[in-house]
View (cartoon, rainbow, N blue to C red):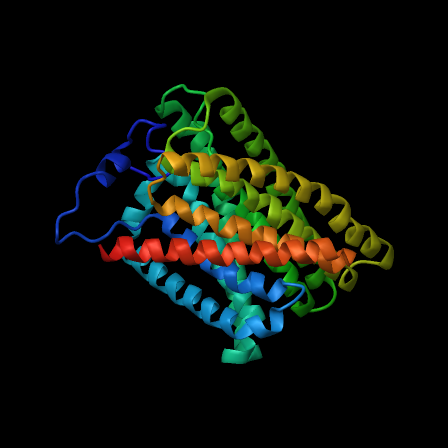
Length: 369
């Protein structure tokens, strides 16, 4: 069964197959949640570039991490392509199906790193071409997941599973946050789009995906808050998924500011000022909520760790969501000139690197064993 919330739902046929003990000759299962490792690794590289201080001397290390993320993405995509029927079987799992949002975000994260760090390695032209390809592929897959996964939840999973009110968890955000990642990474491509209607279409599409994802995420976060308030935290393995809530919040701050910064390249001057202001007017309040949620998630995580927090792929939830808070805080620092945001961005990045090293080491140890 999915390691994310196995006590919450009854096993489906796909889940029952997943819990059968592996024989020595069996191949490891390919599940969508493993793409979270690509997301968590890629955000370490892209967040380094966004830092208000230290970005220059961190660039060589960030480039190495980006290459690692790209290699991991290639391995997982190859494995998934070879066993695509098994990958599709997870759509019947009411828990694992939500992590179909991870592969699109993995594509988008590596694509952003390619645009920011790739030119020094493979040349500007190749880096831009790959970035466009990964963005279109990730965006198409992300939009499909944003519709298909909630549709499955509404029409099949809810009908097949038990009628409980405590099913909502952080993983429900995975499919709906993917378009927000498209909006944030698409902002990096706006200046590279041909001027005129093409650039305007890209900019407006990114803003549309920004709204699509933000509203859906706020609805889902409300459901998660309700579950926590009425039904307690849940099993220990599920606790790390609380950190996923920071993902859409941090990415929304990032997207609003990045899009506002390039709006003037496609929109009249009057709209440019409005969209630039939106990044701060919306970003700062969202940043405040992110602080609240991070405090709650940290308190619950510490409490659970004292009682026993077993390692599972959910630990990758400690990486990408925190990385989006780094990029969002760095964007606010750049647009406001606030020293406070600069300091917090650096501190959060240090925490991100520590979390990534810890989770990466535990993952390697688990795979080796």
